[in-house]
Image (cartoon, rainbow, N blue to C red):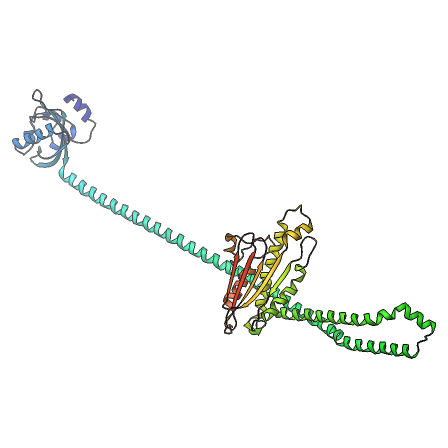
Length: 460
């Protein structure tokens, strides 16, 4: 860069700039330098840098030499002699423009800056930097705090959502249990009412059968005595004897009364089972015969065990052991038997539907042979066991692990609530301190095992 080029370049710049040689000859300046010194720019032409500063010639030459051989900007300090006799300490920044060599002198560009102003600006800049750093730190802290608050809020929202979902599930379970309990209570009351209404006329019939039979036998004896005394009966009586077939009527009427007696006794047994099952609405803790509860449940479900057009008869095999009376909630135990046996019937009906639809009913009967086996056993002096098993399709492990979960069901919508086994589990485990387990192999049926203590403390 020539001095002329420098003058053209520096003229538009507001900073004080000087172009000097490596020996300190002032080659060019711009107007801001002249303004600092209080001179005209023309007066500076041809001067030596030593004439404008208070530093020694040796110090100036060392500084210029350092600027000449350095590839970076060299910071220094120059004290200017002002035209009014004052001095001004300036910070200088020197950089070589034309590299120094033995053949040619280096051209050095010096930028001057009022040291007081520079120091003030430097302090101000540092303050601004400190403020900016603090602001950045505050913002980072605010961001961290906001991030932490968001994480805590998300955790709280998730916990609250989980708690609300659990509460909703509990309310749904409670609501369904109340509905189920109300249904079972209504069923118990209805069954008890039916049993009472049937029992009165049946008792009247059964009680009078004995007298009717005796009266009939007396009349027949009278007829026999008459036949012995008057063997020659008038034609009209003989004709009537032949029409009613008296010889057949006399032995058959005894069989007829015996059949009527057996039928009345059967009705009485049904009434007894209905009354036993009607304990569903009882909350009383009492000693009962477990077998009576199972039998009454089977009687209630008997219509589903009988053969129908699309389903074969389901055989019930009972293997009862000698059991003592068990202290329990009889109505609730009957509900457990009802749920498990009804599920077994559903499984057996599903196994029939799973057969080849082209097979005939007789083939289905031969292939399926549906059975429910109910076994009771006295484990020891403290526990009894009731096993209810079917030979249906069985249950896979994935379904079996969820059997006792609330609202879990494999049945179609409207056929199952998913609470039958859940309620049964609560009744056995929580109400009776017992155990309820399920064992199954797919294709080989399912087995439910109920274990309850013979005597437990009254749980109010």
